Image 1: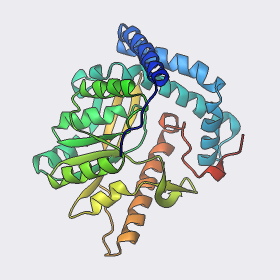
Image 2 (image 1 turned 30 degrees about the vertical axis):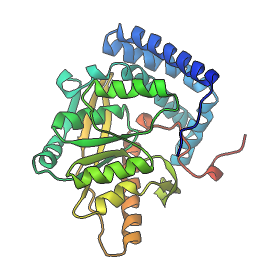
Image 3 (image 1 turned 180 degrees about the horizontal axis):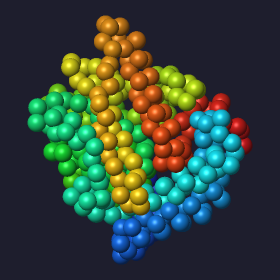
Image 4 (image 1 turned 90 degrees about the horizontal axis):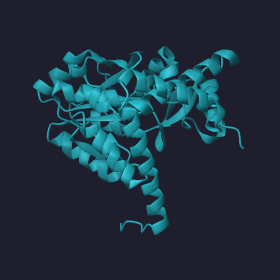
Length: 303
């Protein structure tokens, strides 16, 4: 497919956007890590609840926690904006947020090292927990050869900044999401490499599985890849300990059913993935990515 031609006006707008990002990034990097993270929390914590997107955040929290009263749901929403602000500020200094910096504790890291040392092809899955960029830093530090998937930004100049930021802490193997990316991931697994994916967002063509008591469409790709051969599905999570300090947890592998009924095994695996994500969100609801429509459109009021 030939790439879509982009007009001069759009390219100019993209360049202005990335210029603004470059200026903001340069200013943030002048500050110590903790100060920058605190500033992001204060800024987003103040502005987030005032913008229209906050209605979506609050509706998502209501769908997930109908048993919580309004005051508690609003507290979670406000805290989630603060976490989002911290992540935005921290993204400009990912090279300072590595296990070597002392800011990342890895629990269960021996599981990653075992995979690396034994050339096991694994599918590492996680969700948008806390500063989810930290997960890739832990994977790189373990020595595991792993393809990190990502969704390219619409603005190609900003996308270059994203890739550059991730390369700054050692990520060298990237696979874009989509058909081409899926092909690359399968080829990587055939070479004995592992792959890492975030598996907690709405996927229109995905498998319908329970999530917080509602049906949610979830991408089956990670489970499908893990079902190939003797592949394993290894969940990971990121927790914010305090300020700009984190804990990455490498959990025990999800044991997938292999009954011979491919579709049933896929559905069971996706349900296990949703259950894993839900359990982590229930533990730390303030740290999840509430700013997207996770459930079907009918769950959201019009207007």
